[in-house]
Length: 83
View 1 (cartoon, rainbow, N blue to C red):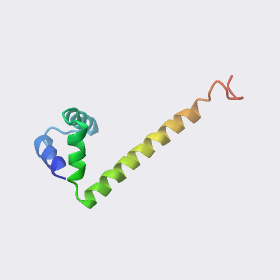
View 2: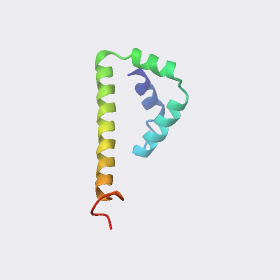
View 3: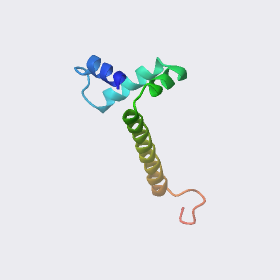
View 4: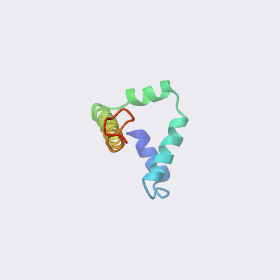
């Protein structure tokens, strides 16, 4: 993907960990509106689009699992086991 290649070329010497990647991606996304983001998606080839959707689904499901695990560790006030 062209955008990823450009970002990597610009920041490859500055990236040290995943936190750096988070900061870079958030900063980049702040500069795009919905129309521009949709154009990036539109310009993807089929493989890139499938990868993009796969990563979105994977990360979203991971987030749901983490939320579920946290919820399971702390019973709600309405649980019969809550003291």
